[in-house]
Image 1: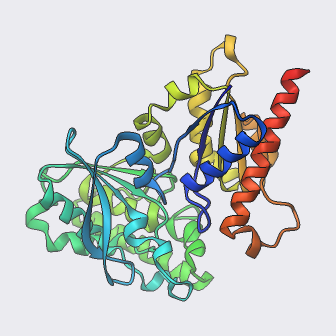
Image 2 (image 1 turned 45 degrees about the horizontal axis):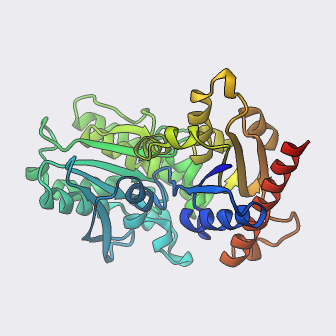
Length: 367
């Protein structure tokens, strides 16, 4: 039996690699002879660089930049010489995980560091192409800080002509910049914004879009898929650098040769911190399920099984209807959140849940 494990990070708790390793232990508990393949995954947020590096290798470099509070930091990026491509993870530069709880106030956080990162890589690898993972950001500044940083280097980047760098943004959301599903109203509360601050951020986004449309002679990317990613940073990348949006998990699965791995698997175990209806909008588990569904033939309609585990499960029926073979929470219903998010607790619960799933699968096979 071949089992492929591809679990996303449990944000603030486990990395993708840690979650995968816990699942692998659960498999060995129930079926020591199983062939196990572990694939770190990310949709463009936390863990993007680790997943890319495992998939295609490349050189790890660091660059001096600024965090969301404009404090100097060094952040990594990956350079692949064969294709002259640089991979950047937004969460490593302006990520929520870089801030203490008391500093998570989106009105005072800026994306300037992403411009410094881009320029540092551009200077080190002239003519390179960029693939930027957008996710896990603390900022909600519509990319205004990023734009101001780019202006400092405008002669190098030629923002207003056709010589600018080629950029692909990889994100887990296809939302527009403004409106009920935009960067402020949908995502800012998750970053610490109060209801009043959400409305201020929404107004800023609307006014910025009007101003930048005027500056670029009518060009307006505010309604593009992915414009609302990373607090509007996706919009800034598209507006000023003509960046192309691509669902992050689809891009990573392509880099990882996922379809070949899935074709030889009996079971695929995927997961994330919280599985609900938003999972269906393009997060890691749904990207994996869609890839499997696109390859299934009638003769192997039940292979591979795709199992979804999560720290919290909502909208279970919708997830099952989408095609997951099973959807399970790793946590008992009465466990306090403060305990559930402890690393060792999560590792133990993933291991126990996966062991139970594999036992159930084996019992079904014996019937």
